[in-house]
Length: 262
Image 1 (cartoon, rainbow, N blue to C red):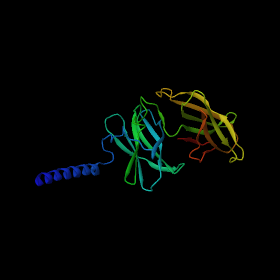
Image 2: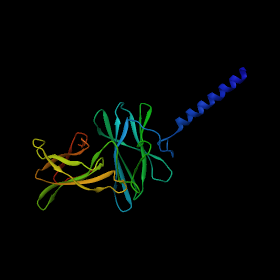
Image 3: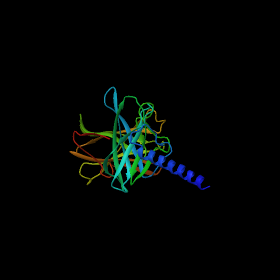
Image 4: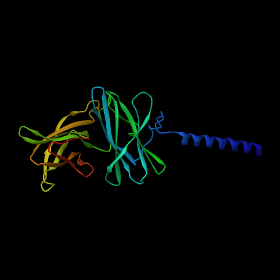
């Protein structure tokens, strides 16, 4: 009996050693899905992602992630595939503090035109790994999927310009948002005198985004203004709730002739 017990102990110990060595030996960027189809954590969440054109054959995926800032040392990783069966890791970079103890991290990835990027977000902190994988579905943008994805963000400024027209200066831009109800109000709140006076203008509905199954919409605004410098934020009123995109409480700021894109 003693010999049998000793043999079993050796087998179990060897199995544990092999399991641990396999975990330690796995490297970032390996061709693996890493069980992204089952994981989720409130410590990390995609804010938004979008595809924008570079030229006729290349596009760029850009986006932002919010993570719970409970430790200084951390890594935010976009775990992605472009449909070739290989999963890769793209490391996001710190951008700015967000609300309620969170941080914003941004990422960029150049891809071929009409490619679909499927991805999940991995957050490594204090020796733990947390995931946001869109509740088991992973995020998909570009190609057969919409060019935009919204998760934590409900409404997001896409681009804006403070430019001249025949009759003077205008603040113009585009917005994308989650279609939560047919009845909604989308507005731009702005100031040209550092919030001593405040004005509001309504955005205009453009249409549903391609491949979004009517879940995402595009809106635009074109507002005459006479200030040398303008600050603004976007509000979205729907189902009794107002959602804001105010650039993480910093508001958006443009001088005459400036253009910006998220």
